[in-house]
Length: 108
Image (cartoon, rainbow, N blue to C red; front, top):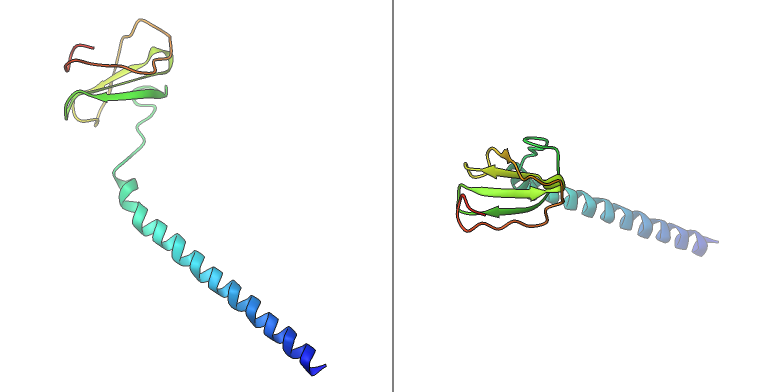
């Protein structure tokens, strides 16, 4: 009977020790993810629905300041300040635009 008690006690310690290690590992993992991904999130912010609530399928940058985005319902948007603000452009279509190309900042 003493041997059975010692085996149960030993098993309890192994399980408890494993659970404790797993808890500490998860705590370290989640803390690391939070600390190391915070700088990545701080560079991006959600602008939608500005200037439109439509999804974009393609973004092309012509230079460091000028870029175009195209997507659902013929939506085209243009930025001239490196993406800080966007202005919708007339596309004359309601078709989903998968891609756009430009040869310079004003011709595409």
